[in-house]
Amino acid sequence: MTNQRTSKLAGALGQLAEHLQWLRDEGVAAVAADPKLVQALGRRVPTAGHAAAGAGRKAGDQPRARAAASPAAPAADAPELEAARAALADVAKRVAVCRQCPLGRARSRTVPGQGHPHPAIMFVGEGPGEEEDRQGLAFVGAAGQLLSRQILRMGLTRAEVFIGNIVKCRPPGNRPPLPDEMAACLPYLREQIAILKPKVIVCLGGTAVKGLLGVTTGITRLRGQWHSCAGVDVMPTYHPSYLLRGGGEDKARWWEVWNDLVAVLARIGRPPPPR
Ligand code: SF4
Ligand code: URA
Image 1 (tube, rainbow, N blue to C red):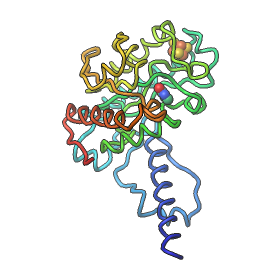
Image 2: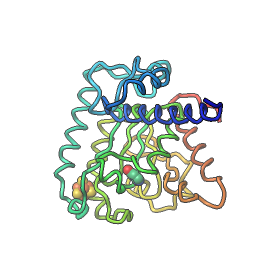
Image 3: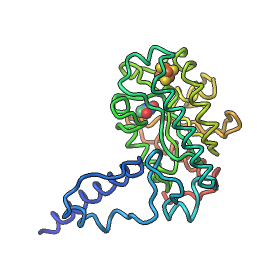
Image 4: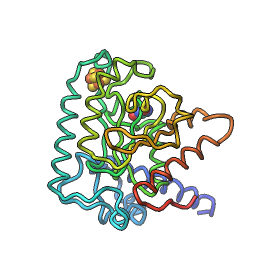
């Protein structure tokens, strides 16, 4: 094989390994695969010490080795984690049958949010898009892929944080949720925050800020400054979709988000990763 083909294959295997790790972080316990492929991936997908997120994780599972060295979630014993997981599942069960606002009529699936039951960081977006509505998982479309990369760059995995939204059902045509819809859905988010007890909430975009902080000041002015909600530190920053749409004429917005995320890492006592 030529060097070029070898490096192309290595790149493709690397991407596949990353995708498998992401699936595992989302709680997918197994995927069908050709044994030869598994052998080729063998050295790229570490299995020791891993724990999947949310429903896929069992009581007593330990976080990955990297997280154990520098915890991304407050220490909690197994029964406490199990109780938080059960309480989150109870919220999700009520959301699944909720018809408190008109968004409940048009949805395919509810998207309660997913992740660690006691994370240091909780990310809150606007509401499910098309892909989220199809899968029932928060941030699994294009914006979600960018969020995953940002989380990885912070030195964390999706399994170590919680990712949710202001509304749990998809607004038609991806429009922002209306004030009445946000008001109807907010009690679920407040319940989740009380269960999760995150150290920091990252508000992704103006809708999340409006919903959680009740302020209508533009995100450009609010981002990068600490706020507070129910006793939890809140950092507003730009929504990943905004960055994907260009985020201004240059890449300045991307760096602003990165600076906000570095401030979040400092607040939870983790060192900033190299730029
Ligand atoms: Fe219920 Fe929230 Fe869905 Fe409205 S968006 S139906 S309040 S779960
Ligand atoms: N955008 C959001 O705000 N939330 C999602 O879950 C996906 C995209």
